Image 1 (cartoon, helix red, strand yellow):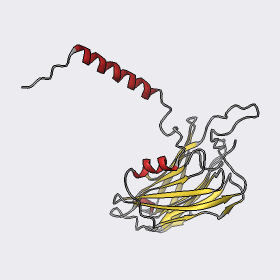
Image 2: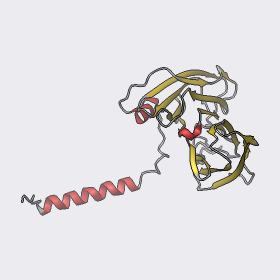
Image 3: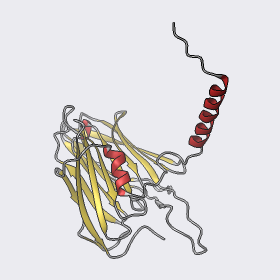
Image 4: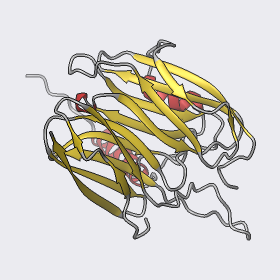
Length: 155
Length: 108
């Protein structure tokens, strides 16, 4: 039987480091509250290293938004929404907002349709980016530019 | 969230297998955390961060909401009708306030 003997100094250093990491993690703002300020970072979080197909997402937004405080959108993917083939999630981002996250919508086959409508804030003219995560592990991406006359993020 | 009840539109009756649209509207300031008061202090973030929709106890749709959603959030989504029963919709905000609303669905 092989036993690894860890010197006492090594053990204590390791324990100290673990405590430091634990304290640091405990003091981070609540998950989900960490603002993501770059579209590249947001996309990396959702896609990892996957390359999304640039097709299949319908992103309905106005070409020109009169009021950036409330810009209506509809996001959908044509999918049978069966157990074998469905959209797991639709993510929407505003690439030019101070925080790029708009929302993530989680679907199940019981949803019947991978479609959602809501209203978002746009700080200025920018790209709205949508990503679909499919049940087969693949991703889709789409983007549309929205021109904004009066910005709506406050500040 | 204000004391006003969320507004929910669901068809009065549906057929089994039909895909119906559900529309919801709730009053909430959806404070982004980007605004500053006149004297330069940041108004802290307080948004509805999660919305869930369940039918007969099973969650079928969820929204993880970020500061990019407008005040008084409108949200419309769909469900494939498995039979008659009861919806439950919940909204949860950063302050921990939770609003829950049930609605029946008849089938025929």
